[in-house]
Length: 606
Image (cartoon, rainbow, N blue to C red; front, side, top):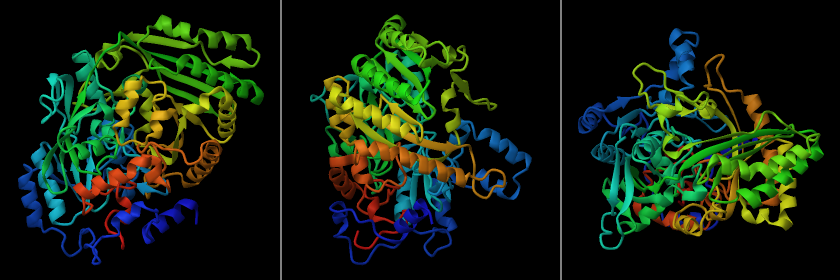
């Protein structure tokens, strides 16, 4: 039995012992609630009850069946051949309520459709679905973008609230949250429905309205899910967490009430929604976010450097860390520096607030240093610098003229604005093998600790690829940006981090039981072992690091502390207040330690 099988067995058969936090469930009734009802069990809603729900939601109740299941019986059929082609299209995945953007995680979870889905077009649809699930004791799942690496946007034998069609975007010249009149000044803002993807939000706010809204880098990620995870984008060191831009949310809580949450009304729920994890406190139906003035330009810098030896690679790592500390640790720069086995270092960074000439001048000392050591280092190509007016950065009509940057949804009838970054292509339909992350504190960049940091990165890169996401840490951001993030539920470690280190592996679209398309379990095990060795080097330098809930290990044992740190007890109190019966339970979501791994059964003593 390997590590993952053992952990799954333990989670499924025994309570999780977490000192202190689990005590919040100690007062549960001696007679536990009836487990969530499954299809075929006594208490499963009658056909008449389902018809009543269908009428209540305007006929938009869908009985789900995954298109993948048909391929188990006929893997070589024309329909299945076409399906495998479409699984690389994130819009195809998102448009089918039976699918998810990631098809699974080997040894952890497999994408499975709910029994039924309510295709919500309005808040009233959501209320009807929440009330139905609560009254009939059903497992409830919420999906908008469907990008959860943890599998939280799907669960077999459940009722799904699918918010994809709640996609209105409305900009405001002067927004004041409800109940805050006279206490807050009007600000420019945008209101988005729960199903809006970041690509659409950017197109409406930036391309059309000439403003900026802080959000994610991937264009097909849902706005609502990212906000509830905290939310990092390419320019977080300038504009902060996406969650910190939240001004107001409309949310349907477990009692079926529609609540407005902001700093003046339901303030504790508002705080919990800002980074407390998606789908843990209710169904968010609308969000209003502060918008910002656009800089003149957004731009990119890219290069890949091959070091000629291990010693040269160590020197290169030390030099890039010194250069980053002195020249790039600022609001101007974000995105990634990647260290690969084989002594390769890749730089893919974005900038704002400066033009291309200023960006090139910033990098000139580093490039001169490389030239001076040309026997030890080789660039795979000339360094790439590009910039464009910020208003065109997410403009589909502008980007379609730039080769290799974006791809479009080629299905007949698809919106001409359906685009995604070409660099995200391999993520569509992926099956994860392993995924771990750790926030690296900025104190590691201090002169007396930088050598240890460089040594750790070199040692980790001997085992697996390590990416430093410089935009996913707020060290180097303006003080006011850091303070705004302090009023969110995210692990405070993010505020002191200069980067989020990620080590991960995935395979192409695959599904168990389909001949020729099954996940590669043996390779996944090898990848997991390599990632584990790499992350062991990280933890020698940074024991018990914080981790980003949206990009983290499914098997994280200390998830409460890793994801939320000192904020977890407050989040748990909010959970008990707004969802005391656990209608909204996700894997490693707030309060999930009181439930079985599948979210169907409350555990004794919780």
